[in-house]
Amino acid sequence: MFAEVEPATKARLDDIVAATGAPKWAVIEALIEHAELDAAGRPVWWPQSAQQEVLDVSA
Image (cartoon, rainbow, N blue to C red; front, side):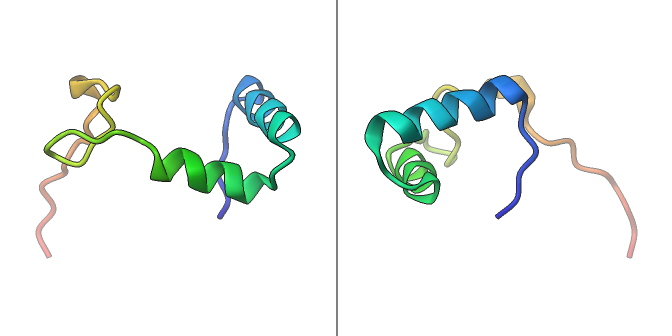
């Protein structure tokens, strides 16, 4: 998996990895597995207005 993130976000992840002693993949996996989701499957903290725009493109 590759993801571009802000340097501050990467630093925060690195801090969590250092504090737990777990590999980075395990920390990311645990964060995803423990995310509380709403009825639509979005994290409960995700803003309603941040939904992805759907483009009307004909095939």
